[in-house]
Amino acid sequence: MASTPLTLILLTLTICLRAQAQAQAPAPSPSGSLNLTAILEKGGQYTTLIRLLKETQQLTQIESQLKSNSQGFTLFAPTDNAFMNLKSGALNGLSDDQKVKLILFHVTPKYYSLSDLLTVSNPVRTQATEKEGTWGLNFTGKGQQLNVSTGVVDTPVNNALRQQFPLAVYQVDKVLLPLELFGENQKSPSAPSPKSSKTSPETPTVAAKAGGAPSPSGDQKDTAPPRNLALGLVLAGLAFFCMGVLS
Image (cartoon, rainbow, N blue to C red; front, side, top):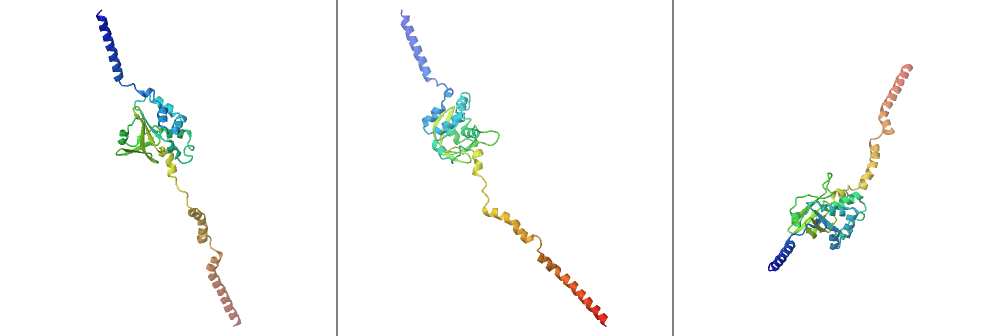
């Protein structure tokens, strides 16, 4: 009879110890249940980015790869204002493949904390990186200020929407425009000046006047002295002949 209360006490202690151990144990990795859309929606100013992630199907790709990617991901999230400040037609002028590249350019195939990015080796590879081109990001830090540069734009890395492995999401106030897509427009050669375009067709005309076929008047001047000399000799000969006959 005395063993029954003791057994109940031991069972109660065992249950309490198990509950305490479960409470102290680390939570399972959230990689299987991460919702990138919910993270961005909580930020409240990423409507355009969410739309592009869905249109390019990269939202599904990222969430799916997070389940098996041991390196994690880092996403740089441009705000709605960042997209609004783009030049008119900048996005509409891109093909579907180029839009995918643009989105992938905002994602690195590795998890980086803000302190990691302050000391990282540049350029940092992005998901857009392939054999052609670099498609990399360059980070510079001074104190606690971190900037990211693409070769086309430079902007601070601001608020961390999420900074927990396997996914980091950081706010940027400019769309990260890759040099491989937008660098051509930045370095487009200037149109030829009106003077140069007018000079070229006039050049043959000036050359024709200066060194073209000799004018007829010039030929007559060059040949006139020999002809006059011959005529004078003929007349002199006739005069001597006449004088001889008369004598």
